[in-house]
Length: 83
Image 1 (cartoon, helix red, strand yellow):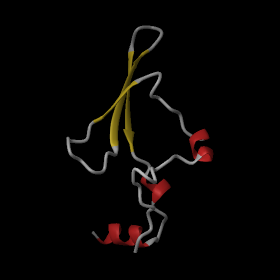
Image 2 (cartoon, helix red, strand yellow):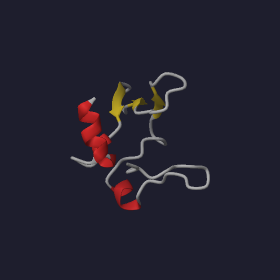
Image 3 (cartoon, helix red, strand yellow):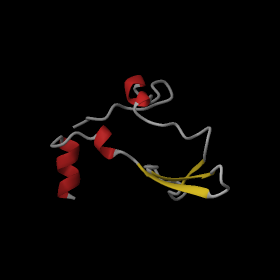
């Protein structure tokens, strides 16, 4: 039941270039940080902050897009729903 590819130092996980074009990379324009606890193995929650032109702050709340990685009715999806 191995649906997810392994990610190791020899085989690091990479974003598909086509998928990357659909998303906005905030790392160079916002302060972005995880809000998951130290030692967490599934870092899937983050906040971002930036100062707008008028001086106001913009706060972003970001949650992992699980549906991108887990197909509907896959073994992983079925097991997750059962839990």
